[in-house]
Length: 332
Ligand SMILES: *Cc1c(COP(=O)(O)O)cnc(C)c1O
Image (cartoon, rainbow, N blue to C red; front, side, top):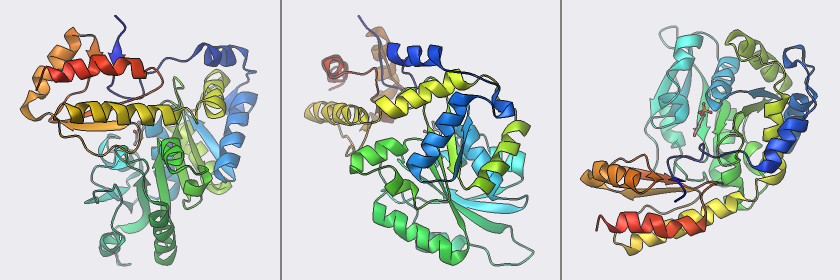
């Protein structure tokens, strides 16, 4: 019986074709700027998203951190959602390493930040206050896609208020595929975008920060400082390039599987939130603990909670759905 893992889209194994691309990649020392494959990945993604420059880093956490450090100085602050990865799930890195103060605010149900509320939190220029420098958004946010017209409004709002705009686009391509637009249509509203290669795209490691040349030069200095300068990293960049060239359109399959999964669970009588991309949220209430144990017995890995999240990915197939349905059927 094959293992089914619905904890995250980070659990995928590189495909044979990806492994071959990694093995064949021309390499050099990237700290000297001499790894041709890293250089190719950075140039490729910068161009694809419409930025002047890009920087390859090991993780999305580092990519977001470098973005925050490059936009903000000591004593600056960024406005961010309470549930955003860049506030909640990155160990407080911007505060710890950059002396940058987060100003978290409540999020809207669609994953956006209400711009009137953002405006109310921008601090005036007064030495009592941290200097508000940046607004950080996330797309997709818990599987939800931010509307393009909202992004346009956030862009003009931040321009008017003299703020920079950063996107945690860990799942940027899920958003683009869902909207049926080029990823650049999303990215163009931002001053910097962080993209994860190791989520739905299926690479084993890697994220890329995109921005202006000046921003990326600054981020590159910080990357060295925090220990992210890698050497023959082209082996890893090759996996990311392969993913970007061959595994973007495929995200639609993950979205379709998430829809199917949601329909099955609804059919069983579960309360399931509307699905937009590759995440299914199902209300398990106090059955969450029992669900985890039963799932493990049946070779299904879940991160259970009262609001349980199921994530579809490269290694989850429509054929797996009946087994998941059967597991949940035991709780009705
Ligand atoms: C996964 C993720 C990141 C970065 O995660 P790493 O595990 O550090 O690569 C950042 N933001 C979001 C929304 C994520 O899902």
